[in-house]
Amino acid sequence: MQLTDLIEGRLVRRYKRFLADVELPDGRCVTVHCPNTGSMRNCAEPGSRVWLTDSANPKRKYPLGWELVEVEGRHLASVNTGRANSLVREAIEQGQIEPLAGYRSIRQEVPYGAERSRIDLLLSEGVAADAWVEIKNVTLLESNGWGSFPDAVTLRGQKHLRELMLLAQQDVRAVLLFCVPHGGIERVRPADDIDPAYGRLLRQARDCGVELLAWGATPTTQELVLNRRLEVVL
Image 1: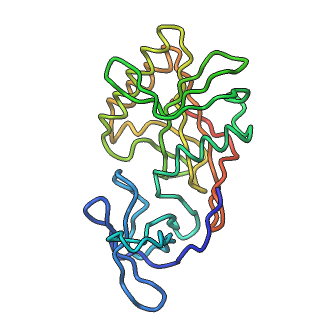
Image 2 (image 1 turned 135 degrees about the vertical axis):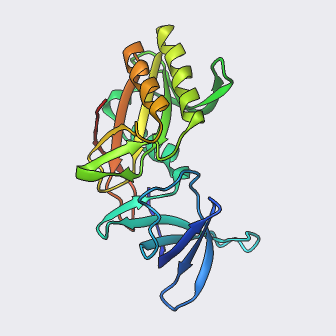
């Protein structure tokens, strides 16, 4: 995924979930859209270097959107969670994610499950059984390269795990894929201290046969590409 014409600035603050104030190089302070519903723990420190995209849409109240942040002064991370599904789909189509290679059809947002969910990607027409793929975006970097999910209690994430477990119990291929667009994260684990219920469900899902995968990117200000497999540690 190519990134073009990003605008650099410094984060002043993030607030009201979807808003952030950013100081531009010319000294102006602008309010930008923050495309991330999570807590953004460790990704929203005031003073951090950030990069913005310009929608060039004069009808938008906040035409600038927050795209990247520099974490700990050295790692770039994509905070735009809306990119995750596209990044994973692109990586699958390019054969980067070997366990999900060989499918000719990819459908998005397909309804399924007892709790009326929508699967992120449904892969079909392949050499293996159809794969129902739920995607979670990981940006919480903790010590020693650990990436943790979630960064806040996620009832929606818990629901998705229950839905995947039901699929696996019916001998349907169910996959949870952690998309990790963060240059500092080397392996992924559940954030048991933040959402212990999610951690318990994740381990139950593994035991039920849900496949757990993690793929990472090392973002630059020019592109985002998922090209490195990461270990999921429970």
